Image (tube, protein in one colour):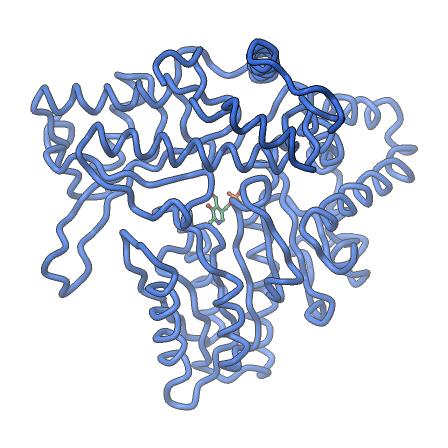
Length: 468
Ligand SMILES: Cc1ncc(COP(=O)(O)O)c(C=O)c1O
């Protein structure tokens, strides 16, 4: 790995390339299956040209920073930024013409691309909104209205995961609690090694939600939890919801598109949202919200404008004068990913493989463990930190993250795992969540590895940061 020209060993191994070439999937290196097999030097050349493409595309990233946190804010290549700038110019050149033509056609085109990528049954099911937070507000607003208008009984439940994103939990409190609903949290084990552990906890929470004659009106399920990051078996949980009579299922998949395959018809949820600015190379900020055909009644954008009542997709396509360019570049992202071997699918697979490889490398170097199995992670993975660093609170985790940024040039989120009540054998421990995106190189992870090793060698612990 050390002699890997700066790139993770499995970014393009010769074996991988040969498999692709002999298989039936398209590849930017081997567009024609009849093309003669590449020699090792040719493969090396192709890898090098992809590496320089990546360097040019992300040249705006601050140099000297090991940016292994794509999960938080995503990233956007120059190719897509240029396309965004073109859209902004089209608007500024002649706003009236833009409003009456290119804007609506462009948004329609983006919705079409998304609908195909996620296997929605129709374009009508896809709306484009600013971000996952907005999508959550749209769904919860509908739930709150149902409580307030007496369609749901006081005390009926909304179920969410304990590891739901903080802002989503706050939104559920804000909309549901005030409207008279109760909230049930699904306790999840972490570290976690099987879907069964998640499924069992979920069933328990649904039973609690249904106790005393209550109904579970909405289940909010993450597809990939943020912190700790775990790939959740959403299809299975949605199926259980149907069996148990849960009214509606909303999947918060903020990290999903561009990171894992999404098949909405197969998942079967009522609502599903994903940011496109995290793993799908869009500029900030843009997300899609899927609403199954049968679940579309009374769905409204929280910002009411001219299009109110014309369906969520149309309402969302005009929420007042603003910059819509991030929503219009979705087709350009498709063009961008085609530059890479295997297109988006190839990128997703390599990101997953590489993050697992780097996670294992770090756990070995530190003598710790991964927080999930490789199958239960996407392009992000959790790795335990050495216990001697004493990450004993959320403040310690934040302080350590800041310390790594300011003193070692490493950007990585740190997670504090609180021991569960009554689980004697569990002790508090810290984890890092690493991401892998196409711009990452193996040195980014070595930098983190060595920073932590240095801290251990210096007998550092987080208490020292708190005291400083
Ligand atoms: C699971 C999850 N849900 C929702 C969000 C909110 O995304 P945004 O801030 O783009 O609205 C995030 C952001 O990281 C997330 O990880």
